[in-house]
Image 1 (cartoon, rainbow, N blue to C red):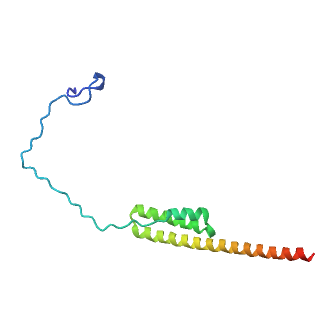
Image 2: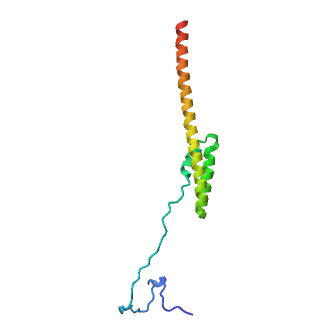
Image 3: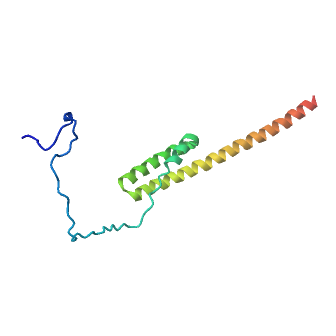
Amino acid sequence: MENTGYTYPQDNVALYPTGQYDRLKDDGTSVTTATVVNMGPTVPPRRDHIIWSIFTTVYMNIFCLGLMALAFSIKSRDRKVLGDMEGAHHYGSTAKVLNIIALVLTILIVALIIGLIAAGVIEFHYAARHDFKGK
C-alpha cells in the first residue's frame, strides 16, 4: 500500500496533504452552547508544616522533637496526596504541636543559658574585683 497523498522531507516539501479541502459552510443552524461546571465550596488544602519541621529539625532539635515533627509532616503530606484529608489534618496538627513545643523549649533553654552566663559573669567580676582589692 503506497501513500501518495503526502510528500516527504527529502523532497524539500513540507509534510502536508497535497489534496484540496472544502471549507465548512455556515448554514445558520448551528447553536453555541455554554458548559457550566458546578464546583463545590473550595476547601483550603491542609497544612503539613514541612518547612517549619525542617527548620526545627536543623536548628532546634531538642529532645528529637524536630525529627518527630518532620516525620509527622511527611506523613501528613503523604495522606494529602492519597486524598485522606482527615488523616492529613491529624498528622499536620501533631507536627504543628511538636514544632511549637520544640520552639518553646528552645527559647526557654537559650534564655536560661543567657541568664546563667550573665549571672556567672557578674558574679565572677564581683569576686575578681574583691579578690584583687583584698591582696
